[in-house]
Length: 360
Image (tube, rainbow, N blue to C red; front, side, top):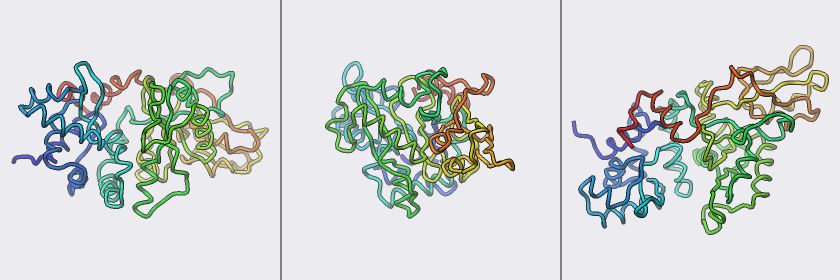
């Protein structure tokens, strides 16, 4: 049976390492129909991860380069495909649905799209959280780690901020989506952070609130104080964003709280420990721990479940007695992190039994 353009695009997106699994009732097709015209879906399904100029795409697909250039430019403007400068001009390529197309719909997200995403998420997309290497990795709150402890740049939210040349903040699309379907949470929304190596990159961006470096660091502290967990891409180099997440709204962390997928997010290399002599048993930490990793023991001292603890350090910020801090896990408990996004793609494709040659 001949596939429709939307079925072809859905299959193509699912062939990417991130995944885009089919739903039993076709919820993924309804989602794509809301975002793409049939012609746009057909074109996107022919794109590769490796970016190509309109001329190169036309030569490969048989289209007209001039017409393709106009369509590709419009699709990129709406966040439906990737765009970047490459040798020979402007290049276009296929974006994964998450992290990718969906996050670029922040300005277009309305109640209809929010419900379409929820329908798909509940039926199928949550499954992608169970695959390793995970999409996101926890980055510990800086205040939770002693200054004497070894910490690598990719393990420090402050280091990621400090290594950038431009900083910006956008609304959390996850918390906006949950609010639009009538299930909002109380966490602040305007604190998802993006970075660039180009100074002033966000100064003219309409949908991004440009920040100074100092403002970005302040926003990190505010997010941690609000009980939010820092997460970013699950690789070490080229990190361009930090999400400040909660289990009540975050599409990745919700799969832990709602679907019981314990390994939905890659934990940090750290684990919380309690100083029994300092712990007053106030249980402030349990109110902010989103992973049920803390439990007051019979002796009135807080206990830590090392399996459930993801090493975010949010509990340490909430402790008035400074009784909680993070320590590095033993080497055998620390999973290696892919060095680059390409290494992550390769490892994820292998885990899913995919051949990257088919989409590069």
